[in-house]
Length: 488
Image 1 (tube, rainbow, N blue to C red):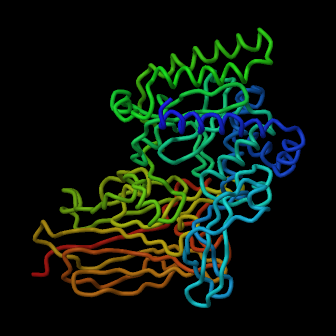
Image 2: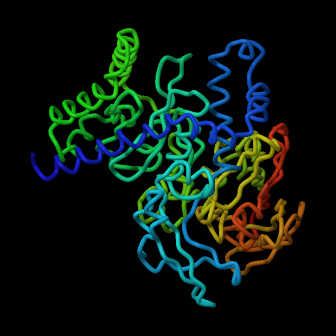
Image 3: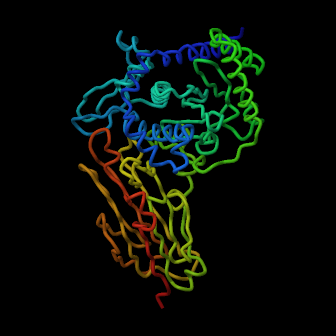
């Protein structure tokens, strides 16, 4: 056996054994006790149609979505770097430390050390791999998230698999009895049934994606790509025949204690899954979203920002607006939509399809409070947004601007608005409505906002733009209105 085969088989074997921890009855009971099940059941009930409320399989799928949302927004926390409680600043990574006996006991063979540049305080972050320990710490990166979330799914009697992407990501799959197929579930992104998220949205160059459960080890790479031929060209660690032999061998071992009827059911399900892999995949809504979990610099280094933070959008006047001398753009967080009032109320979906600049920003929808807003990504210290209107290709200039800048802060969160023209910039009061600014003679205009500060682990959430009820689909609180014409 080659060196590459030995390493590959070791990863397969370790993970096929690891998922068996999720089957411990006492551990499942501990995990279930962490879940506010009555609240999630009520939310799932509210989200279902009248027919769905009597359809137990459809209701289970709705509950899964609520579970994902709760896990991301209320239970687990993303960890980029330790935070100094004295200086209220992010600490600097100082490399790896030596695991203690307690660390090793809970699977933390890797420990990250941190130090505050201001006061010299130190901290450490053990990368725990024990799902029971993660129920207590409730923080980490994708490995910890998927590990803990898969356990909770098993505790709620979902048929769940731990999915390992060889290009460095981890998530969960949950089997839907209603749809008779596996659903992609990424707890870091609160994403359900968006398997092309990594290929299309993050721009990952996938090669091997393997799913592990108590019953099987399955190569599921083909669920997560549109171009099988391209992916095959990157699968050069082991031969396809060898990989199939090893996954079949491990699956046979896992199923050795099952009865004939159970094995037949798994075989029929596998046949359906393999048939699914042969079907061409179309990109669905939300699968073109770049990664939102993790610090902006970290995501940029990994090349996972996607298109949502890479393509600056500039608004140019249409023929209708040229004739009327007015541009009016409004945004609603509840519908995640722009309304261009000055051009026959035309609309543009998704906040990132209208911004000139975006750094560490995502749209947050709170299912429990039924509120939506734009805010900083988890763990980030600063978020930036801007919108640009440009008349450079015309013989016209900006005369005046009127803006509404809705911003909500908590604790010591800070929101700074600014509008700039060709010659000067002006600071705007946060929360202003129909605020008038003289930008006479400018060929372009940029409205920008910077969000920072806040306290504790939820500091990122203490600055919110365009916060509104998710039931309010008619109000567009953020607005930029430009009057333009000739100075002659």
